[in-house]
Image 1 (cartoon, helix red, strand yellow):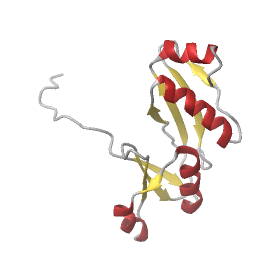
Image 2: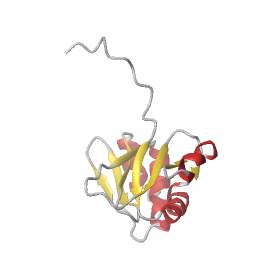
Image 3: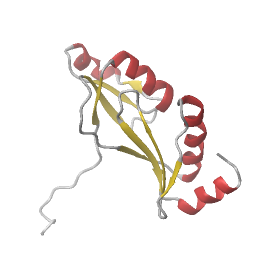
Image 4: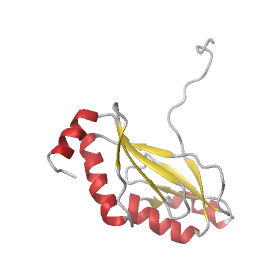
Length: 140
């Protein structure tokens, strides 16, 4: 297959997430992931469209749609470095009902959890040795 003719992609712009109660979901995403609404796109939410939220850096966007839960779910994986991974492990243990277990994938390490509507998330790092060393030292 000749990929030379395929135009480049810059980033994943946003992910559509279906939630039963958008205000409750917005609070959960703020408390757990630190996301806040994107003021410039609020008009879409007012018209029945998505409520766009983002991380503090503006590099990760989620479009919350108020809809009935969907059967097919794709895991949304968020990438971090080793020190951030250990910090996320501590944070999630404090804010979630059940702290996610560390999943060792031999080349990467991940935490898996779901939002209140069952949308699955993963926080993953490929800084495998640094995370394993940090865990061994009890840093998370």
